Length: 316
Image 1 (cartoon, rainbow, N blue to C red):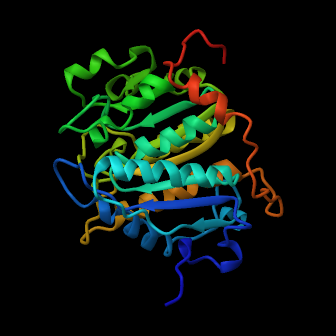
Image 2: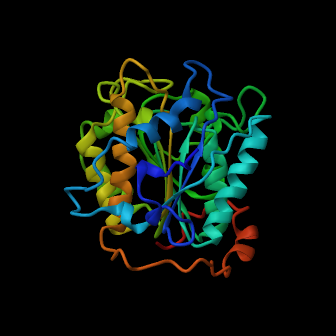
Image 3: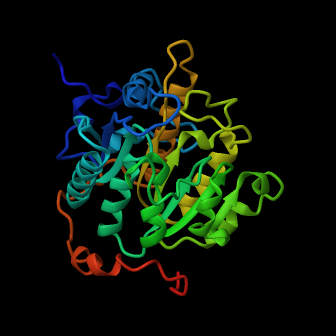
């Protein structure tokens, strides 16, 4: 059986040694509490990607030519903790190869591992969390690696910016930084939220994008669809600004819960992933290559620094 490549691209652009981009699928759905099916998300996303045009009109680019290496999926499901550990290690290994690492879930608990890896490898990290839900519980269902806890660790050890929030438990208020949280009902009334959010970011930014941030009218196939969400072009406008002004070090996309009767959500997820890559690499020449090494100058010192909550007094 022939090995599958991302979006069916030629093997010329799918080899690890020459690819700038790595895509790690994580079909995990071990902690979701309502609609199951996020474990089928990566495959639905990949199938939709194969039916997508690979020329991006807006950026006048074909980002796949930068090289996109599709890894074997991470299928560990013995426990949420075991899954998070493997995602953490695999993500970190590819960062060390100097790749632009992207991850597609799966439900949001996978992001605990990705964020942990990026925070160990990049200084003064901002985590841009785009989601309908706060995901700030310290523990849920007797586990700190639950989807309801997806960014609790990030809130303690990174500069966490939350965008699109419209559902949460009152107990999460004690953890939430209200100055760095952009609630959906406020965003609908004041479009200055984009500049405000970007102004609070450090240079290095990791994006974790839960698809339920979108309004269910354009993204119905997700585990917990919440009314009043983001629409397509306002989301792209925001992402385009973030990619332009900040160093996006990687991203993950989670919570696609595919519906066999309606594949529009699968296609939206595929387009979102490709659009984010297009923004990241639109100014890079195709012949510019990454060296397959990582300058490990930051990781050791960061092991201690990142056990301290991000200091709001830091200059950025």
